[in-house]
Amino acid sequence: MFSSYTLTVKMKYERNGNNKFNNFTGKISKIVVLTELPELEVLFRPTKGFFKPIHVSPPINKEAVYPYYERGVLKEVPLDGEYKIRVGLPNELSKGFEEKVKGDLGVRTRIKVEGGLLEFVIERIEKDTFNFGNKVKLCFSPTLLANPFIINRDYRKFFPSPSAVFWIPYALMKNKNNLTPQELAEIESRITESWKTRIKTIWIPYDNKKEPVMIGKVEYRLLKNDDETRKLVETALIIGVGSSRASGFGHVELC
Image 1 (cartoon, helix red, strand yellow):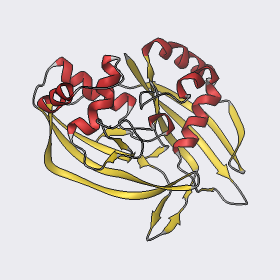
Image 2 (tube, rainbow, N blue to C red; image 1 turned 60 degrees about the vertical axis):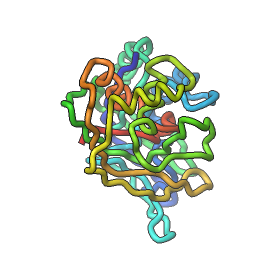
Image 3 (cartoon, helix red, strand yellow; image 1 turned 120 degrees about the vertical axis):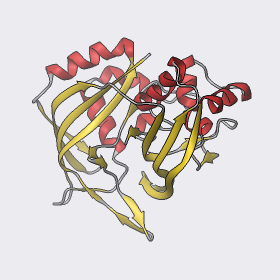
Image 4 (cartoon, rainbow, N blue to C red; image 1 turned 30 degrees about the vertical axis):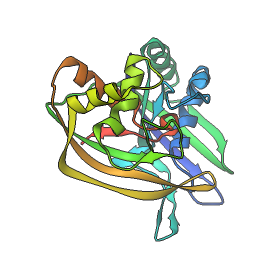
């Protein structure tokens, strides 16, 4: 199925004499991954639907780092220090990815990004494992929840019901391009959200647009604490949720 890795990356972005980045930082993560392994570019190419089998997180420093709008004013984010980038990809590509990154540890790379210069060094790579019980609290970084009934980026969901959150991981797990209402009901029969839900919608920059995204914390309870349900949650942790996961959106972590 899929494997997850955490890259520890020391990076610095500089443009016009400062280190602030004013676009969604998932782009930075994608650049780091493709610089290390250009062969993965095929997985990032546009596909029908939301089913690219790869995911990168935004840079993480305790929590995901990204610019956002506050009362209509863009709050740019400095990129200068040590960050974590999580990468989820198919198992058949994981060994080659791991070996390539290990061979490039400590190598300083400089690349032009959006009118500035990004300098980064990958210091470590670790394969991730996940441990959880019958309650799972997930922290969402900027997420674009796709509507399971309308395969169109213009129609989104803004409440983290189990079917809205887990349907894309479920489809990837089953190697399908869409789900039936019965399969969506199956997800709901396996997982339910609790009252301990703290989410909100914020606006972030993405290229020349302002995107509404969901962030926050949600506690789910596994109604069926079996291998199938646990595999579904693990797939979401590895490959992300929602659309544009290859561009850094839809990253969830245990919290």
